[in-house]
Image 1 (cartoon, rainbow, N blue to C red):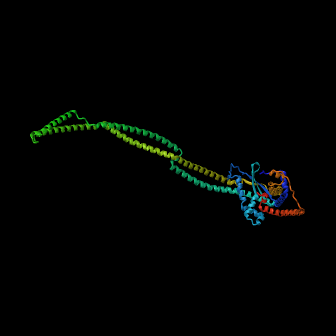
Image 2 (cartoon, one colour):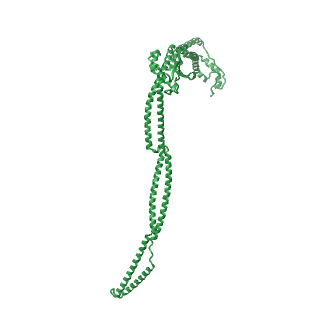
Length: 530
């Protein structure tokens, strides 16, 4: 499909000319309604007055301002007071303002809002750095506008004087109350601060370094004690090993003397001979035979000698054992080992106590940052509160001194620089500007209507150029429009009917559009309300 054919400016103008009635009728309706609405707008007059803020007559080196609020904040406070609902209602009743609105039964709140829109407070800096502000009021009657502006200026001046005196004495009362509150808070935080330091002595500044020094000292003591214990344990182990060696030597049985062994061997040999003779005699004789009895007696005598020899040998061994058990070297070693063990127990107890003290200091040191943080917070709160208390005392003393001279010498005063003027020329509406704008809006409306109606013609085939562009074929034949004689006779009548219809449409549409504009609230924006 061929793309959209771009028209020339001449073709667009021809399209608009063909639809000129659709441009002209909306232009007439919209422009006439707007111009009529503008002509019906009431004239709005504005009166202005300037008020200068005079600085204090006494130097701030002698009398400090009671409050430190800047002039902007102070003006806003006074403005809220002067433009309050009660004050504005008094002005409305005094000058009979907005009677038309109030006659319609409009609530007083909406009337006050309407008046607030017509009041403007504009601060500015006058010459030589002097602060000033301007009061402006707009209304329909010039004299009423001037009187209302003068009334507002007088109320601002009176409100400033009342505000200055009220601020002085109110500030003193507030400072007294605040001083008592801060004093109670200061006493509480002083008590809490002292109690906290008593319960947590580690929170005292410098205590952390003290504990670190104690831990270093205990660490050196602990190392010394551990070295002493290790040396003592080594000494005990050495002495116990030596004692065990000596005791092993004492536990060896004493050797039997050689002579005793020879005698014992001779006696056993002799007993063996006697026993052999006895066995031989018993084969021949009975046990009651004198020879047999004799041999038994000799055997018993030999046994007694062996027993005596064994008893003497055992006694000799016991004597040797007792002499070994009384060895002074073993006794000295045992005494030394016992003393070393008692000393070891004592030193281990001392090391345990040192370890407990070290761990206790370590735990205290870990808790010190938290305690120090809390202590710092308490100290900071105490310092801040103390500073605030001292500042409040200074402010109270300054306020008391200022109160003595505030009425005559101190504080800013409002002075009227320019009285309220009687306006002669309305400031709104600006008809010289609004009439051309209304004509432009009407023309724009007509153009939009014509373009909207003729937009279909831009996408349809209307002439030979459209055929050549969309179909890509040459135009061979055109059929002209055939108008009959009857149609020619009816043309003037149809034209007259159309003209009458257009005039009727304009006559009906202009009032309707004017009413729509009037009740839409659009024209109220053109009156220049604040």
